[in-house]
Amino acid sequence: MSLIIKRIILTIFVILFAFSVSADERFCLEEEGFVYPLFDEKNCANSNDESITKQEFINIINFEKEIRKAKLEEFRKNIENQEIKTEKDIKVADVEKIKKESLQKIKNNKKKQERLARIEKRAQIGLEELRKHVDTIIVIPNQNLFKIANKQKF
Image 1 (cartoon, rainbow, N blue to C red):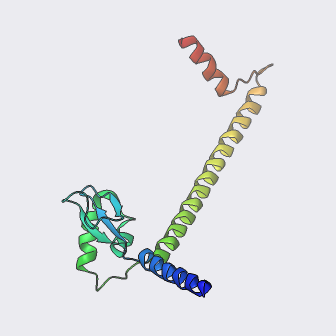
Image 2: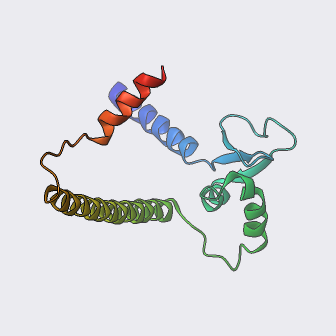
Image 3: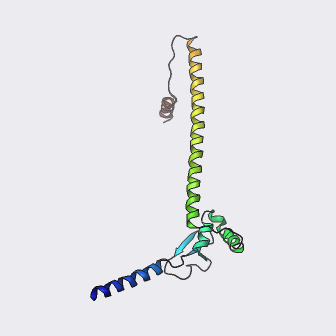
């Protein structure tokens, strides 16, 4: 009998906990665009801050802080006509953004490597041309020249 009572109490506790966790999450949007969550409070800390829902938060968080207030107003005015984002949409957008940025970095690195290869090739051609006209060539890497120049300044 006591085992059944324990299970009933545990079930009630789990159900109550599940309802409190799934409660509507609320946030506050400051004048400057900073967003902070409301935990136990019902209202925002500052009277100028605006209370927003999780759905509104998801739809404005990816904008710059300076324009979030305007985007919130725009979202509220056009809520019927807009496709409302979900957390999954945000995750997909973040993955796409990271992928796009990574591909751009790879392209930039490739261009930089190609440019450095051309510079090295021109330097080698210049050295070969110079060897035809001199007996000895001494090559000092730029890094060493900078070290010597910095020591002479001090």
